[in-house]
Length: 453
Image 1 (spheres, rainbow, N blue to C red):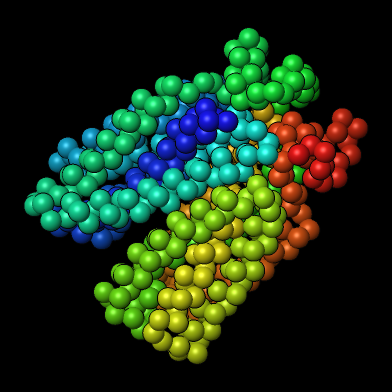
Image 2: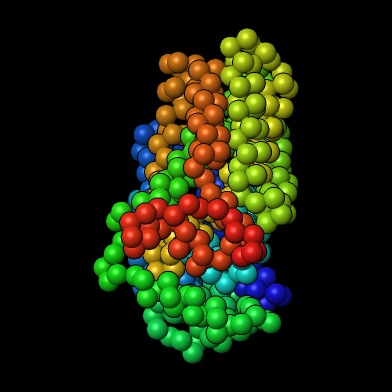
């Protein structure tokens, strides 16, 4: 188990770089616009947002190398992209070059949301899969906090502080790249490539005391059911495709990125001063980290559905209270408290569950493609929804916006109650068999089979 934990943490460090890369640009925001004299439109869409567009492209295309090159090689190249992006951004002398290197980092972010959860889910024992894949989400949140702290420490070192802010990412990127070279290939990916002996050696390490030959037989039986040229969009895989779409869609329909990107603005609109709003936004980051840890602790104990129930109810209560605060003109710290409740609900529910769940529901040979689909839905909405927030706030008002988010979370609660299956403690092969259409064309009822635990 110790080796599996080390390998999982190593792969999950791609999430740390994801969180760090996403937020580190905030410290250089105003300085870069002043330095290059960019217009608001150019600065916003090119200089600041280019990494986000790289993320969307990385999510759309990341399934290709994840399936063809393998999870390990893809994780290695993600580290290279992060390293080149950090150094290139730090040494850039014009906005176009800077945007190009930020785009490369975005490709790494998008691809990491596919390769890292897929890799960890395929090396993890069924009973520990949730918390091990959950390490990826924890590292994202931890990377965000470290980036804020790094920007704070580097902000006062002079004119070139922004170069150090974006360039310091190269240090953890190089460490991650070296570490990822020490992990083995995914045994399930190896078997899809008929590299049986290598797969057997890895399975013996990650399943000590178990009948590895029997497990290999189960994996091979699933692989034998694949049809050459099939993809996730055929009728056979409609149900897992719907599950991935809904999970990613509701993740962003909660308004989480609107909160993270505009927390100080939201708190200022609620009547808090600028300094108090900034302090509260740091508190939001800490809350996110602590409740993500709680979610990781609970996910293999309570299960994915129970965490989603907790998160959905927490979303509905907190978003309704935030909406009422704006409609009824409640001011002061009450809005901040409601936001903290919202972040806690997100972290313990959707934040912990999304990457775990999507990495579990597709068959081995299509896991990269399925992860890519779910990740793409997530990132496209992550780009669209926050970009609409300033316009929506000024046109229909913050209260209406948050009321809409609350309604969407009521729909998520219905999805969890009536559609979402529990995946806790079930092998990936058993899940694939139950979630896909049988050869006879009848959709099998998905239940947690206790004896598989």
